[in-house]
Length: 432
Image (cartoon, rainbow, N blue to C red; front, side):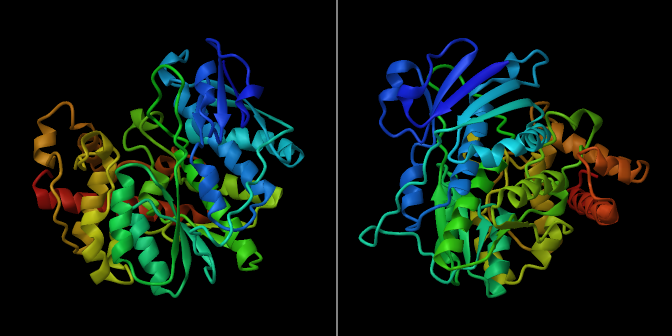
């Protein structure tokens, strides 16, 4: 088991060892380097201060939990675990109100296990990072007045359709963005073209390990995204006197379910970042701890192609599509690969929705099929399409996680419709 001990004051942290990683939360002074201390959340404090309102201790505590989880997921290598995959992670974390979170310890650990596949042990203690004092009017503050909801905005095709639809419906969202290098430039270009009343809260956890390599699977990234959204929602709630705030997670139902395309993908190749069971688990925790956010995925029962086809402003979407990024590997090449599952579903959705893009992918489908290093996802999708008529769809979609029985028929429908969209696209490309 690897132990990670967190504190916002680096002087309160123990000395690093082979089995213990000290991590400074919200580290800003730089002196951590003298004691072999890892850091996460370095630029976040100022970003929160620029919201211009005081953030509740519960919102800050959830952010601290999310940052600690992201640090563990990043700093502890899966390859060092006994089975090469499942890590045992023990986190000791100070919170502002630990008494509110200790009763939810098991529920959080179960949600994290579902999300990452690891075994988590959480210990919450006194002395957490207090909400930072907000900046005043002489600083450039994030616009909050009259905004009424928050929405995750990654710069992907789904989140772009999500904001277009919200603005077309007359909503006034605060868009929550990970300000990663590369992602940020695409987000800014989309931002320049969007029209309507909205604002953006851009933030980056920015984890840095003191020594050694980091893990790149990042299966827990969604809890960080949700935590940033909670901070933004809490700011809206206080600034605009709202009883609760809708937190939109715009993700097509096929990807959200992410049912394993082949049996070997149940583990490492089947992520659960927006799976309905995980989202419900987090919503239950919010309700119990008193975080007034309602997590909503308006596209849970729509395919990506249906999202494109039914977008409220298709002309605007066509103007923005070249700036959207769907690829799971693009940061490694600074170019969308064209052959990973997200790229395949993206291209199938644009084929279904009749929207043309003008970008060059790293590989074509036909090139990928003859390349052992790039054909796995294409082959997996071909196998899934071939098996659709023979397999029990209920069992198939439940392989990715528990689903409510009264909605199972809808989940089955969106999954089979998603496969059908890919099949039609493959046929158009001559690979079926």
